[in-house]
Length: 376
Image 1 (cartoon, rainbow, N blue to C red):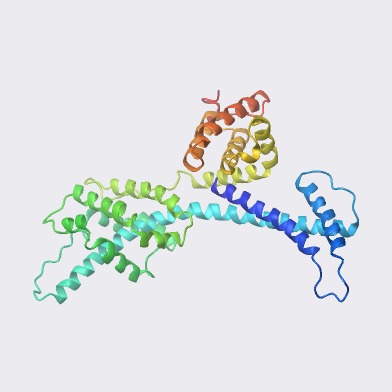
Image 2 (tube, one colour):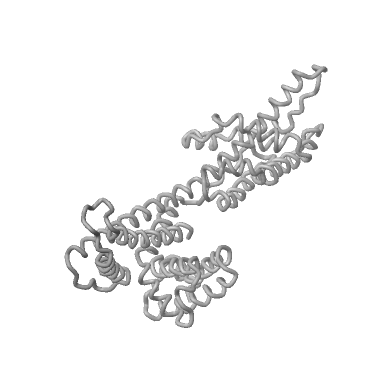
């Protein structure tokens, strides 16, 4: 949804640039030795602008002199070329951004271990400089059972090595984050002061450090935002994944569950790509469907995000046979509720109900497999 929306914004900018190209083409040449006829230039510009307007209104191009057609064709070529580049760039960004969720999930597990190591180094340093060398070193967090399980996970080690995920180049940041965010935090100090800690204590403090310190730290958030413009949104999924891993630690086993982003990423990636491409390829057709079903509501007054949501839902209803219509409608209503205007939920709900009935009456929705379930 975000990347389809972003493409529509790029498309609008490219549209404006095409018209700007025509305007610039008929500006007086300040380097010319001849007197420029501004009135004639304005008249010629108007001819080409009309040609361009015809193109964007999907009307046949009017007859015009070749010199005018050349300028119009160049503006159109620039527009189409840039739109293709934007579409491909945003598609690649969508996939890499999604895959980055899994990488950041693993990095945050490693960060918990890094903080445990830093707590141990800090305590050893305090002992070294203390006036009493026998000062007791508190290793509760360093030897925390959850931390140990993360540290010893062969699955995590293999995956992070393959993806080249580590904090080797960020030791100074980690030291600063630990000092500023964790070391003096009240709950952390209480845990470190425990004479003994059980599994419940260990799980509780790791969850606290992750949920209430790491995720709420502006400096740590800034670090991840520099690598992921969707960090604020993606962190919600990562939070759920990390907490599931922490919760998986038990007294019966030393193994932890390394959560996958999806059960089958290859299949889900294909779905993302297909939905993105189909929505954009059929944009005009879906626009017309929306126009016909919103006669009492000017299309240009429909929130841009609502329009994107409805078009994606139409694409899913028509082209993805295994997804029940009701599932599609409910999911896109939730998207509009969470990301668009306060009136969007009702509007999108009403539009999709009417559109689904229309598409079904025209036999344009054909479900199979799981899509047959709850499809009425």
